Length: 152
Image (tube, rainbow, N blue to C red; front, top):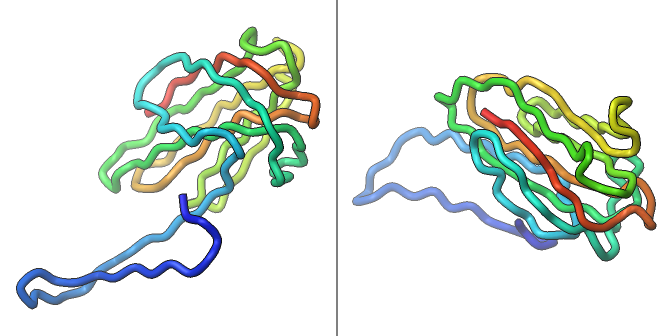
């Protein structure tokens, strides 16, 4: 996470080695809460959203917690699933960001579980950064939640 301002990347060879270098920069909005790595596989995470978030990503105004991971260029991709169904008593939104594809999706109110949210998508093969954010729809939408997920 980089603060506002100028940042520099310096690439240097060891012992005067030189050659071509490919550098990929990716950026994604994150919430005001803790930024946590989302482990590979399936799991359940417990968290709490709180405070004020100045971003209006997906037209949400409640506090946000973000989970992220990076795939290597050799990763095969696969199905991704995340849900707060039966895991919160307030109006959640799940925001999934894939900067490599310039893709942002907002998932609010899963029909099978009311005000909680579910996201299902396919992670394409190859390298890249991914961010899943648990958000509150309104300023008054916050609190404890349980997030279930499966990621490649």
